[in-house]
Image 1: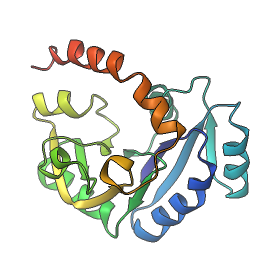
Image 2: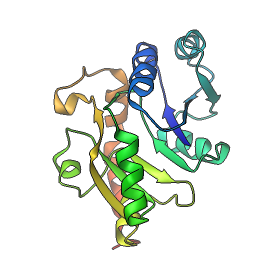
Image 3: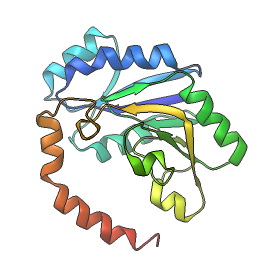
Image 4: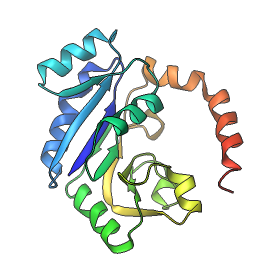
Length: 191
């Protein structure tokens, strides 16, 4: 069983296409769980219309929503998703096969955009065994990360010219400097 966690914010138009992409391309038993802030009325309306499962999050941040989702779900695997993804056929089977083969609990999927990801040196969206929740670089340092090029979960990000820039991407970039400094500060723990 996979719980596919999808933190969302003010992109109600992405709900139905994402659900369809997951439904059409996921063979493993799964559940899609959206995480949304209570003041995001349009998003909540779209989730109701799609009859989607969702959890209200008291905070807007992606990390907070993912952590909340992990605490509230109990499937064997958790996929750390987003609303700007396109799942490709067999993404889940390939990733779980890679886990079975290596017993590494963090399986990076191929986002078909980021060169570092496609080289197997990072992951933007990973399938994680529920027993392990310290992510990509920490997992790499601990030899708990494996990349799966065959598990294709395409990131439809404007950086790769696969999506339109919008206010949510702009909002994410506003804190880039602070986020980068925090990342570099924490990085010493796994180097």
